[in-house]
Image 1 (cartoon, one colour):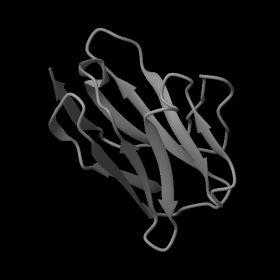
Image 2 (cartoon, rainbow, N blue to C red):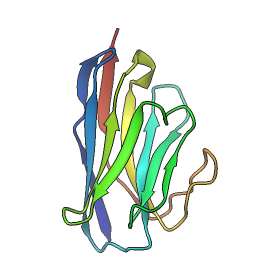
Image 3 (cartoon, one colour):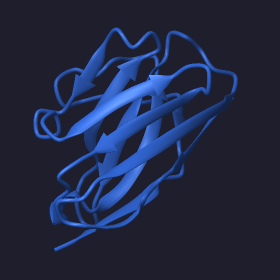
Image 4 (cartoon, rainbow, N blue to C red):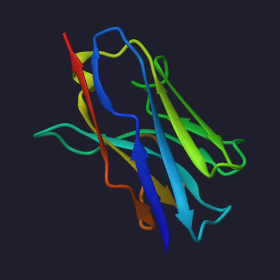
Length: 124
């Protein structure tokens, strides 16, 4: 009963930045951790980052930590993903997700809500 809508994707040159937004509506829960996955064509879905409702717990995949930053604004019910120094290999559909589980390493089980995805394309 929670809906997630991503926005902010687009086309950007290598080395540039994008900020993705994930807006939640409907029945939200403070126990949820919210974050991001991405999936490139022909590749498996990959965990990117996640954040607890309070912001007190933040999780990054090791390969993302140096360039990506996750944050949230609970007044707006929105989670953000700031992506810097983008590379062509970052090209993917980025999905917002919410779960009562927390990430463990680079694995995160999501059984509660998924967004529709937003396309990020990084040109060389």
